[in-house]
Amino acid sequence: MKRVYICHPYRVNPEENVKKVEKIVTDIGLETLGRMRELEANNWYLSDTTMGEVYRELTIDELYVKYSDELICPISVMLAFPKGMNAPHVKYDHDTQELSFCLSVLEVCDEIWVYSRDLSPGMIYEIEKASELNIKAVWKV
Image (cartoon, rainbow, N blue to C red; front, top):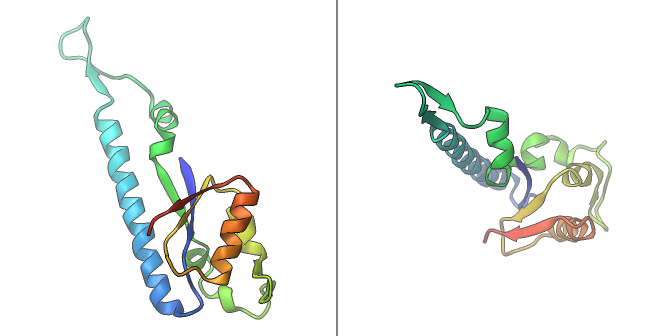
């Protein structure tokens, strides 16, 4: 399953932006769930040797490994840590946009999906770090 970091503005309008990201993550999740159900349904076959016997061509694990690039796990720091984004104890340098916990999440992702034409300084920083880490950026605007 491909881990995708959701890159979206936050600080200008936190409440509205959290709602937008919730919809993005929900839509991706529903798409992935639909694809998983489709793969599972199409994995059943009738045996050639016995009448009516049904079998799976691949185990569920093998099926998901084979189609792992089609299955998306969206990861959003603002949904995982919504109250923590502005907490005083969070290590955050407003000049360089160094969000240490955002970067540690980004580091384990396969891609970064960007959901805005108006890039905030934090988004620019995340995209630059993704590039340094050889994480593919996908523009969804």
